[in-house]
Length: 102
Image 1 (cartoon, rainbow, N blue to C red):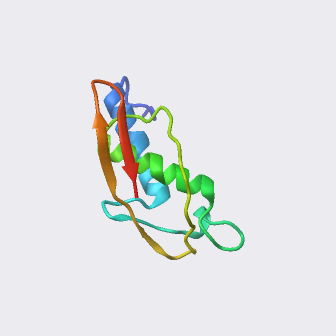
Image 2: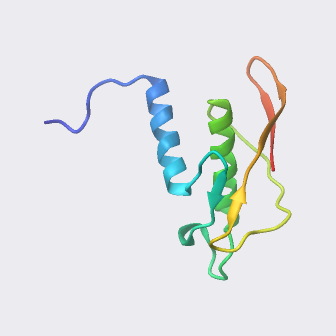
C-alpha cells in the first residue's frame, strides 16, 4: 500500500501543515504551555519558538499562510508556564491583513 494517498488540494496541504505546527508547538484555542523543546538552556522560551507560535496563531485565526511578520518581545516565559494568546484583526483587505498578537 503506497504511503501517499494521491493528489491533495492546496487547502488540505495547508491544513495538514497547520496541524503539524500546532501539535509541535502545543498550540490550542487559548494559547500554549512553554515546553522544554521550545526553551533555551536557562530555561526560558526561545525567541525563535515565540515567532513560530505567533505565526501559527495568526494562521490559525485567519486560515491564510503568513508571508512575513514583525515581532517585538517585551518579556519571555519560563518553561512550564501557560502563555495565553489573543489575536486581533486590526485591518483586513482583499489580500493583506494586519493583526496583533498579545
